[in-house]
Length: 600
Ligand code: ASP
Image (cartoon, rainbow, N blue to C red):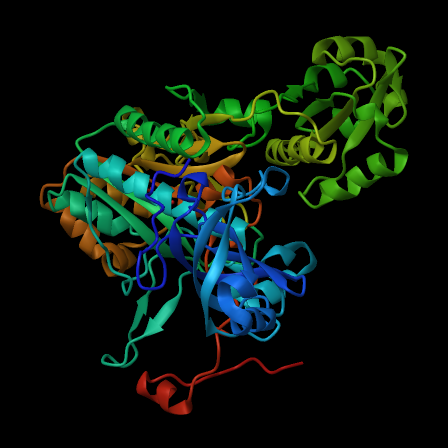
């Protein structure tokens, strides 16, 4: 459902786009320009589908209309040449019309033609996607972008951003740019560094997000800020991440959680309606972090389907099965119809679970009303009680995880998703959209032996927990809740934010709790702490991942398919070959000496 006017520039090259002509235009003399999408040479008749961003139009070349020279020239055309024509719109006779094409009722009988650009046989054609590997598509990205699907994605992306700007602009938000060359703003990831030429030995960092700047805009009295902002995080390769990505970044002063939630879910509902015609029911549910973890083992569960986690610890403790009796927590997931999985498939699950830190995954099946296979014999004494407790039915598979709470949740949370995907289950509803709230403020990092912020260090703890910030008790700190919220759509965290700390004293306490010394606080965050001294309003905000939203709207799994010029998983732009070495002279200018790892 396009909301942007689709008109292309009318110029000396064209009177219409290639997606525009209809029966009403029959008899008109028109001009079109575009790419030769395909051609069929019938000797004294040549047919060409001419393509531009808006669609395809069939052109016919015959000597009567375009002269013998014109026909001869048209026979030389090859795929992806760029041509301009003048011709007459004619109706296609009934059986020759093509209903799949918007312009399928007509064709253009060409009178004049001109070649604007030639092309050798390209490495692949726009319709070839399935046969072309991604590396090749990335190397010739400009050819890949010619694909109708890619063009549609870029159009949707543009429209989503346009709606964001309009929706927020109409509500008094100002789009304000924040620096790209800045001081590192820690958001938990590694940052990119840029050496300064003018100040030898000093470095800028690229922003992981505009977080601190947007807070300072609130201190600066701007009240409502938005920005379609590029963020940079030097993270290890992951299929759904890019080193640079786009956020819709928002911040407001004098608001509470409910205000920002209502604003942002309204925006998402508007985008879903415009792009998919889907009516999102508002308000979206609020789900507590604890509930999400207990029931789904994840803080961003996909609730389009059930398969909730069941706590069966008290029941299985009645058996002699050491794996269960010795564990902190035993939970299970019932997979409807999962008994059809083969022995080798279920054996493979234990190995798979190890990837999530579990020792394994115990499974059994419900056959003829009792447990069969797997760990059946170990839990036989409690089988009736278990089956009744978890509501398992004939033909179901049950998977158990027994471990520390964190691991049980992690592995079963992932297991639900895996079963949904692998068994190609039909979702109960097409969209699951809700907010996760009441997150813990801090998590204890066992490796680093310190607390880390679950969102970021600028997130306000709930007022009733402020006194606990000074507590020496680890459990007390872990139970502090944050004024944070994430929007989850079909199992993806599409956005997250929080009400911020606006008191210098509280901010200092949080820094201290996170192990940031007074000296480091001044060095890294002195400007923020100073700003909080000079009359900071209560404020809060959020950021949506634009790439992720477009992926969901387009049903695309690969983040690279929603970005015009993406990087590969190891951060390479294959088209322009970045990153690449620079000249010695350039390094000298920025006072950098290389110390490269020795190649093995
Ligand atoms: N800056 C945060 C992020 O990038 C979002 C926010 O708290 O507004 O995730």
